[in-house]
Length: 423
Image (cartoon, rainbow, N blue to C red; front, side):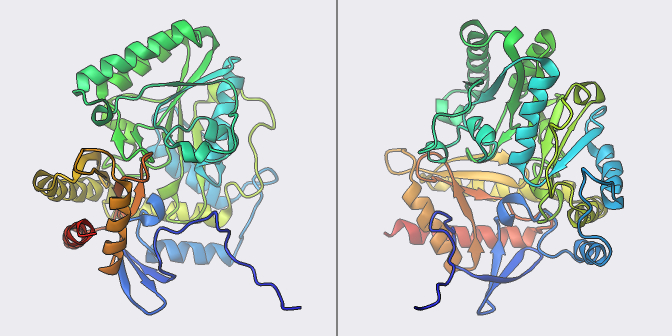
């Protein structure tokens, strides 16, 4: 009998055809040594680029001293140092931090905390949000039906209300905002009373829906309603946080402060690490044993996170994200003005989305897939998202990207647009 060989699950699909062997800065290299501009950043994870020397050195030092100090058993120095460093970056008062491995895990922890701290059952989420694939996080996710298909029914107590996606509604910002706030108030009148509502959970800039920012008036309207009714405002900064949007936290664009902040992705430059932060008066109302996990706050991941925060500060990467994001926006806006297949351009900083449409203005997922394939042939890696067959091409390079690399990527995108239209 021939020996069986393991293979990757067929349910785990890759968006590119390459086998990566090495990463350096903004670039990935395949088995043949070919270089690719990586404008995916592992879905926003490699914030300081691939294998930043300072992050590599920190991880190597930590591997040689302590790999895993289980957080329910002991404290370790990298976590204590990360507490201090991250505490200076978090909104004032949000100084109690729980660490886990992924965004989904801290979303789950935030739902538990909200329910326990308030004694209320219901969580309000917003149409188009993505919060993770574990059951509670998935129940709060409405970015694409494919994520939920085959595993329904979802967890109870999750209420969905509209998000001010101006492009989808075809309205101006004020009209969309006023409509969404009216619908939120209608939700209070028809499905979950404020007295039953523990929290609102929102991405300040939606990720999997194609980098749709909230609006100032909408976010401020949420904050006002939360304050009035004793509801927690929980900010999902898994993707928008750690400098990605051109500010350290995505919610800073909208002049509001959350009660709970959830972050992951770019926090540790590729090492699995996530964090939930809140105030002591909220955290101490959680039930004992409600936060935990075997690998959360791993020593090597925490050391890499401390080094990541060093690099972000020392190299001015938040400012660079704003600067290079503005240049990328200008280049893509010029392209959109001359190419009707780009239906919309949106986002902030280095998280931008270009929505592809057909001649009738309908979402065009097959076109965006062809664009990715043509871009890959020319040395550029991009990814897609969107509820209609992945119609949105996403732009999220490492925060270390420079102007020349942005221009090179857009030039390849122009070629891929032309080549993909010939099919």
